[in-house]
Image: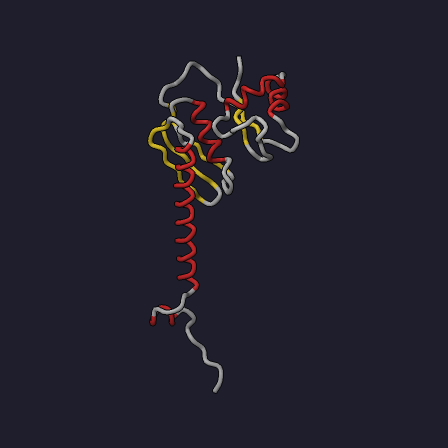
Length: 164
């Protein structure tokens, strides 16, 4: 007896048993695709749970990126939806493909702020508005994602609207 050589992938192809590297890769790709589809559904459900006024909402996930489509009622709603998706674990970027149903009176787009250690809404308000007592503006702009002004976390991205 000695060493026998075989065609590596022939067994799975002939007998339909075992898995070849190609079959494993296909299974892995299918599993990734299924996980991304599930994550997209979860993100749509999260957006819908907040009760945002959006028509034709669609979300797709590719790895750690998400793309979102739909017609939001206002610029603020559009920004809140992007933040809802982007502030989800596992999502590193959001491709915003949404439109706005009615263009409002010229309202500048909000700025965004990534929370760092030591931030409070008061400190953030001081930075953007020059007045720490404007923190309720930031809190209101991030409802319903924020349930209390003291409940922000490092890495969270907040919407900072302009004030008159």
